[in-house]
Image 1 (cartoon, one colour):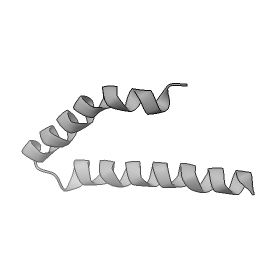
Image 2 (tube, one colour):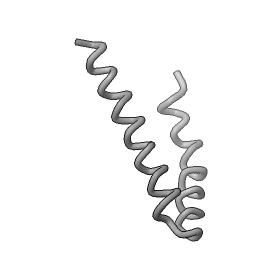
Image 3 (cartoon, helix red, strand yellow):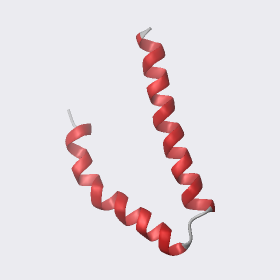
Length: 53
C-alpha cells in the first residue's frame, strides 16, 4: 500500500511538472516565459527548507 501511495505522489509531481513545462514551451509568449522562469527562480531558495532533510 505504501508503494502505491508513493507511486501516485511521484506521478502527480511529474505530471504537474510536465504540464507546466508543456504550457511554458507551447502556449506562453516570451514575456510569460520570463515571468514563469523568474517566479521559479525567486521562490526556489524558499523551497529548500521543505526539500532539505
